[in-house]
Each structure stands twice: as C-alpha cells, then as structure tokens.
Length: 278
Image (cartoon, rainbow, N blue to C red):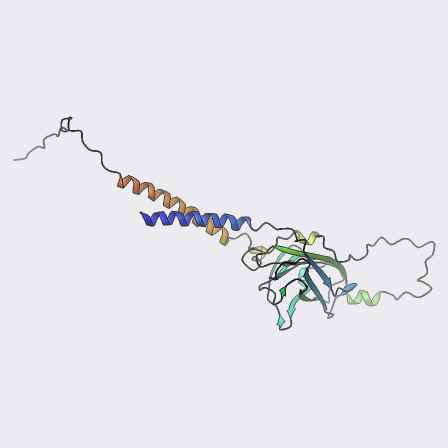
C-alpha cells in the first residue's frame, strides 16, 4: 500500500512540474539593468558576395553578480525571401551552432549553447553574425532584433534595427549625383521615403515570434511545432499516475476493510438443504 502512496505523490509532483513548466514559457520584458547595442550595420546591405559582420553587445549597469548569456536573433525580411538571406553566428573558434525556426517572413536564430563569455558589471558579452544576401535580390528590407537571455531564458535586453537591401545591378545603375544636380530647385518634391531606422531598444514587428523554448535551446521548426511536446507528455503522465494512484488506494481500502461480524442474538441464516441423489 505504501508503494501506491509513493506513486500518488510522484503523480502530484509531475503534475505540478508540468504546470509550472508550461506557464514558464510566457515571455518576459527586458530587465532595466541590462542593455544591448547593435554595431557594424551598414547604411544599406548590398546583395551578392559582400558579407557584413554585425555585433550585438550586452552590458550590465547594476551591481549584481555575473551571469551567462544565450543569444537569440530575430530576422524579418520584406521584398525578398528568407532563403535569399544567409546568417552565420561566429566566435573566435569558428561557427557557433544555431537552432533555426521560421514563420512566414520571420526567422529566429537561437544559440544551442550558452555564450562563452560571462556578463558581469563592467564587462560585456558580444555575439557576432555574418550576414549576406543572394545575388538575385533586387530590392528589399531586413529587420534585426538581437535578444540576450539568461540561462533560465529570462529576457535581459533587446535591440532592433532595420536596413534597406539593394541588388548589385541596381546599385551600379544608380547614377552618381553631380554638383549641379545636387542643388535643390523649386520644382524638386520632398522625398517620401523614410530614412533607415537607428538601433532602438523598443520591440519591432520582428519580435512577434515566440521566444526560445524552455530547456536550453530554441524550439523545433515551426513546421513541426504542432507535435506532441515534452511538457504535454509530462502533464498527461502526472495526471495518469494521479488517477491510477487514487483508484488503487480506494481499491486497497475496500479490500482491507474488516468484514462485518454477525449478531449473536440473531438466528443463524437459513440454508436450504441440498438434494441428495441416490
């Protein structure tokens, strides 16, 4: 009977763990003591063989302790496809492994491992990304959102930026303005194009994709996200153990219940004689 009590306790524990794990996936806001900077952004990206190196740097301004960091980069494209974009996460030792998932025109690239650096007051942690675009890109726009998380996947800081992407042919075809043509004339109309956005800490539309899944790495690709996950399996297992434990305890209680004793004042129960065959 004690074994079934242990099974019941295990079921309760698994149910609690599954519930808290499921609720822990809710994204949190960036911590006020942390900030992230994006550097290395060109005025505009040029498609082709040109590779640009972006750096995301997170710092800490309070007097807290040191923490490890996991980086996640959100990328959204407009006017081009995700397969026309190449992003490589690099460290001094070479390429850094990434978990990639996509949804429409947005992709999330999350480090499979914690960053080798340690974030402390007065020290920073840097992530570098090599970005290139395919030769067949005409014109488009790309947005980046660099996010720094702690080992428990709590958001520390986010930084976003957007840039135009032009093809090599379009860049060569654009004429160089001469001194005479650069002078404004009364007939010139004001340009309606918005300038490139400067890096900002405010979240952009690229931040609509879910944050990295719990467990140390980003979730599976979005195409497979409808499958049965570990959290759901643990939740069902805990509920099953809880149900079986409660049922077995009730069964054992009935079996161990003492049988009712007969009243000595009552006559013995009548028994019908069995027929004898000769």
